Length: 358
Image (cartoon, rainbow, N blue to C red):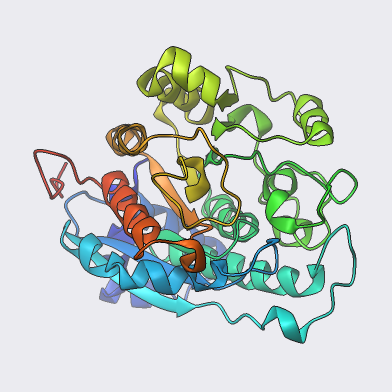
């Protein structure tokens, strides 16, 4: 089931039939929700935007301004120009780091991060259930635990098959409080989503929003901690199958890497979600990131990957995270992030709008 079939729920919710069904018992309302997500094609598509201005999970300040930078780069206008209806839900409420105690050096600021990602999970669950494509703007990458858990949980409640997970990043984010060298939770969201215990993140994932490690793939990897590598191996995540480092991209090319990755995360053209840490790209292309690592994905490789994701047709949700305006050059990184989102949503070289009836 593609996202294009999900959006019909918004039209159905405005009908007298939906008003009547909303008074039915929960089980029968659930059946209606499934029908809404499998409705007719050709309905105007809806993208729900939610910002998460948090940097408590990172070691450097500034990514809390990421949602503002991306909005300044006209994300809502650019998506609307592609034929989507955009519903901007504003930002999740986040307190300032200076107002809080660290609490645990191996899981810094975890009680406050836990509240933020839990609120975010509720928000993305509600957005998805309402027929919107959840687009989360970070903020540091700890938000991925909440955004992805919310959508996975919504699909389970709707009786839909679980998603796979495509994680674009210079890092695998597979640390736990026991293995982390920094204590920063932005290096731990995938571990939480796969069921490893991460203080501050695991509670929002629970047991009903977990991802299957066999349906996870990382792309752009070039910086992995030693103990983190053991976590990857313990989960059965292996190079060339689930983990595509820059070496695989150099040797195979991005098109082949994407083919192999999508075979893992979306077998039989199944549903999947995308979490894009902008530091997956080379710092020359994306200077405004908190943890730059040289030798990353090129501008054209990144767009090709997003175009292939768009062609696949079964993306269910997306994150764009780790944009740091303090370190950026004239909002270059935020503008690049907006371009990549547009490529995911159907913008191509020879067309600027998708066929809404396809």
